[in-house]
Length: 86
Image (tube, rainbow, N blue to C red; front, side):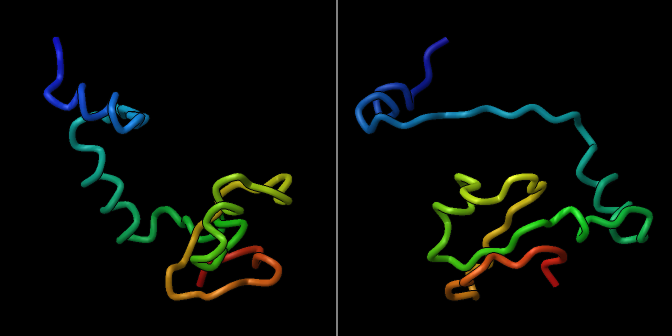
């Protein structure tokens, strides 16, 4: 089956990644988060400013990191903060 986006993907040299999820998982996850049954803040190991997107994506200098996030409202973080994003 060919996609109508096929030529555009090829001409613009885009990489397309598909994902799979089970139906109904997002509402369950949201309910768990809202109820406090699960806590995710501790999974964030490094926080970067918007100008540091490349560093955040490559993981440069973050051996042992679990979850790196970029906060657009943050300028440049000299040393990416470690721990909770809040």
